[in-house]
Length: 396
Ligand SMILES: NC(=O)c1ccc[n+]([C@@H]2O[C@H](COP(=O)([O-])OP(=O)(O)OC[C@H]3O[C@@H](n4cnc5c(N)ncnc54)[C@H](O)[C@@H]3O)[C@@H](O)[C@H]2O)c1
Image (cartoon, rainbow, N blue to C red; front, side):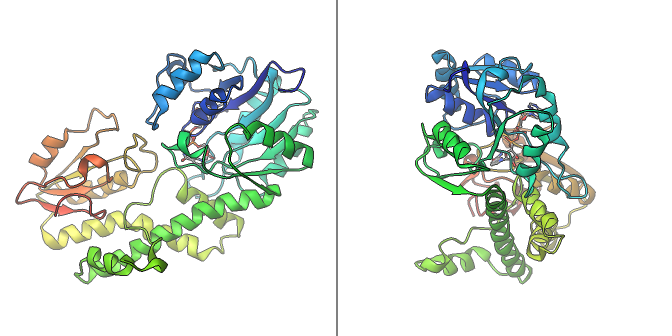
């Protein structure tokens, strides 16, 4: 670390789904790391050595980092002024009108202004609207602080970050070569490759990556809807499209495209293009329309009104306890208008209103697979049930 600093890095929002694995990784590489997060329960959990959410390899890595003495965490921000680097990784949602919100970043910087000092480097890592890095550079300078600003987007798959940090190339961007070199030094302990960009290019690259994935899911979901509306078996069609045919190897299967990133980043790109990103909006209509389509499929097989529906899997993705923006909840809402009752089960998501998998399989007349958790793969459905399984996950 540079002279004058007692710690290497402070992670603002470091208790979050991507902030915490990153903070642990820095600590694992021998860097003195401080987590600052306003969520008291999360910080208490981290300090007690308990991961606040599912993360592959997380419990062992957290315990190792705490034992090494390199990792500390608080809700006060005390100690951030000792950090050479400050890394900001808070949530950047869109609002109820699907417009980007900038308040969270302003609030986070305002909240720790008293801990900032000249000579620090502030690395923005949240996914941001294009131009925000430049805006934040001025925002910090207007506070009279001489702080270098960089933007280095996070691209890991939630739940597998600890593995991916060490494999994925890191996009880095800054407003001057000296800051880029400092950023390389920080990430150099585990990053195999750097991609240098201008901040606005890096902001766009991250948004386009997520929008691209969202479009791909929408394309296959629409194919699924077309096929199933015509009574065709989509599995057979998908197999034919992909089997030993390299040009289609990247085609994903159908399923809920949800979670806290893909749709909101597609909408950020749409807002940036003055809402002329037609493909992005069309993708949202398709992906968000899938729950209603599945209910229509069920209604073609059986009458719904007097039936009990069950949803197996409420998390937004497999093997995760994260229910943020999960389409299983939209499915539940729509089903509650059409069926007598809706039961939900998930082995990862804690919710006292959920029932056990066994009760759901016994009591539901119509069973929807909401999340393709491993526990459901190949699961035998009880005889006599109507099953709607967009993922082709359970036994058929
Ligand atoms: N989740 C992912 O898979 C993923 C992947 C790549 C990029 N991203 C991006 O990373 C960012 C964070 O996502 P996340 O899923 O980790 O969010 P998260 O909600 O899990 O974590 C954010 C953390 O920031 C904390 N926080 C909020 N305001 C704060 C403040 N003012 N001061 C200090 N702490 C504060 C919260 O308490 C929370 O612990 C988003 O921009 C997201 O788009 C997420």
